[in-house]
Image 1 (cartoon, rainbow, N blue to C red):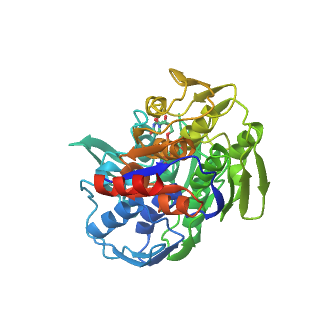
Image 2 (cartoon, rainbow, N blue to C red):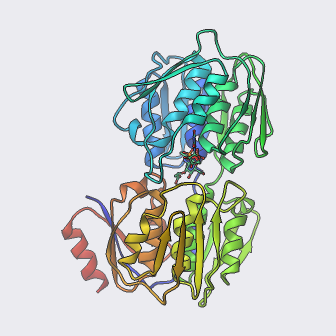
Length: 431
Ligand code: EPZ
């Protein structure tokens, strides 16, 4: 079972280049189904969730040519099935984007209910509400979403009861080819929503308002091919920003859009860190005396829920008491028990955690329980005294490309090990 093993205490220093946004790439990959022309996607992150989505496209007959780790050409003209079902696709959240795309192009879809990080119940009722409003019959049978629009898709005025990234993207995918003018209100405004809308518009869609509370889609008859680069990943960038603060390091984080990082920068500045912003980079210099502050996760442009574990680890090493409120998911504090094994002092009551900062962590063996929790535990291990082993790193590899290699280049003593012998060799090397 692969693990990350690390010896903490070294401030991370140097430069890191951020990859493409996983949560934009997943919607864009599904969107390639909407045309029979070649779709070239660049700046694709080479992470497990992306690779699972590409494999699923191949299974239904699409041609997928990976020209390099970060570039793929997809052609869906020979797609012969609208039913996707394999053990891997059931494990990822973004499988649901195949429903919107297959419905949009073929008016039918049969896709397993999504998996993904266990951070809450994660229903898809808003997705289904949108599909039904567009004229689709949807039923859940044998663990799959079976959807069919017998008379094709027609425009609708949809009000989302919950601000949902997935539902916003999924309804955009389905409505791009739907006859008439669809309006979706109370939509998510994350950078990856705007990126998927820009991608669809580069294929000839007519989508306006992405990034605001209301998206208007004028359906078109067909979409054509495109060559589209994915935006940089705001959460990967934020993770390295917290790593700089937590290890009291100094990291120049390159290939980012600073505006997407504003809420993260604001919190790190409140804590006493120094941040320099450039056109496509941010530099974070970790303060030796980090101060406590309060954080509440909110839909963009609020503080991202996907950064909650990482900022919490940083706060757990600050002096003073911080309060973190997780307002998006109902079960996103599971990492707190793992962090307690390293000496943190955090109390969780419902969706609020109260963090009493400690002077330092000690290394321990901990489990990554989900993608971002795993990344947060690595930050904790790199800040701790002694050796930390993070287990279940498959979660981390779902969303971070070559995480340990990027950290090594910043001076981290960390390795990916596959057995006890390799772990022992690491321990001897760093002792
Ligand atoms: C996406 O998940 C991301 N995943 C998540 O990132 C991210 O945490 C989340 O958006 C919020 O930003 C992908 O893009 C693959 P939501 P998603 O629909 O679409 C409720 C990561 O770490 N809701 O915005 O599932 C839901 O329960 C992952 O990269 C409904 O009630 O999130 C949650 O409380 C983790 N009904 C809230 O809305 C619905 O139909 C936000 O969920 C849909 C959602």
